[in-house]
Image (cartoon, rainbow, N blue to C red):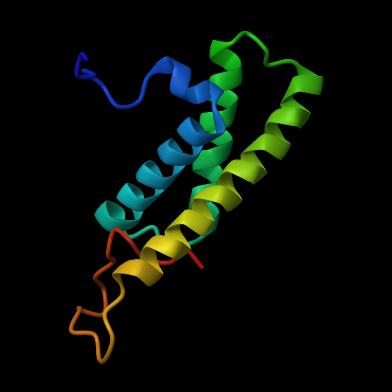
Length: 110
């Protein structure tokens, strides 16, 4: 079995799992690196990734854009739920010793 040379591919933009993973990773990276902690950042990432996937597939016309918007909402909510689960799974009981400005990679978006 060959080891993959890349994690995300162009084909990742065509699946719910791929788009959710892209949205989760990019949004959490923006949160940690630049302090973008608002939930709408994840929605913008989901919209951009979904429309990029549609553009790569050559299906970015008006009716498809409406479907893409609905898909982006699904992708965002799926990634947001994944962030909630990851945050709950990695949270530590008791008082937190993190700096007030520090954002963990696995933290809640809402």
